[in-house]
Amino acid sequence: MAYIEEEDRLIFTNLGSFIPNSVKNVLMNDAPTEHYRNRFLATAMVELGMVDTIGSGIRRMFNKQRERLFPMPDYDFSDNRVKVTIVGKVVDIDYAMLLSKDRSLTLLEIEMLSRLLMHRPLSDDEISYLRKRKLVEGRKSSLYIAKNVAKATGQKAEYTRNKGFDDNYYKDLILKALDQHVTMSRPDIDNLLMTKLPEALTDKQKVSKIGNLLTALRMANKIVFGEKKLWRRK
Image (cartoon, rainbow, N blue to C red; front, side, top):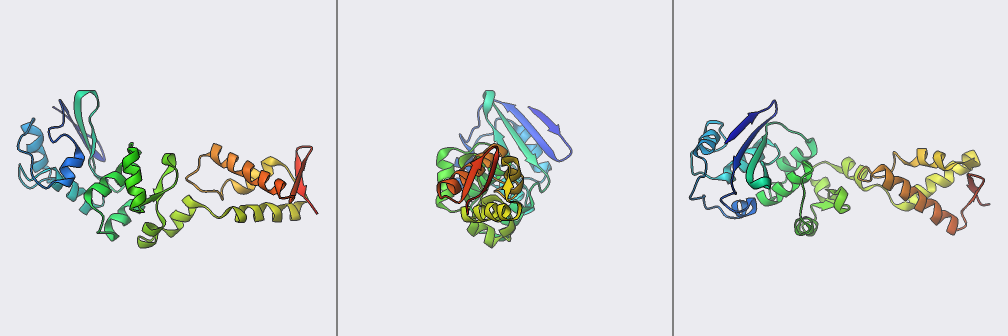
């Protein structure tokens, strides 16, 4: 058993498998585990106030983190060991607002959203579940809080930054800029749009998005390309 105390988190590691089989099993079933591989770990949780008594269950530890608006305990089962990281601070204000305002979320849903927050992997089934519950939107590689959740938790601005605007908005910006400057280069267009495109996109994805917008405008006979410049078709 190893125990590391950092400024904002506690890390416990122990060789062997996770006795309840999976965190999902623990969060979905309220029955306490009947066995303890490491008595020291169980005792430490009591002393830290994460559980009231030995045997009160891992669920209480999750509920304590929820009450504090902290990320859920993070479990890593690789290399035939159990590693538990408990963060002791608010690391994302939007996530904290979600916990404080939407009490209908289950512990399992919060655990999945917490992993998303901590950049930990989610399975395809878990992503599909969160989508069906309308808790997340976006591509698999860049998920973000869904619009209905954003409205309920005061995250409308964050949602818009992630989701972006309709393509016609960006096309209109390009055309208005060309009306003002007559001709523009591709770097000029990139500078115009990069900060306005969804924050959920990478820089590479933003550049590709701009290229698609320009191609759509050219196909619609709205702009003309030539000599590393583009201008509006009259």
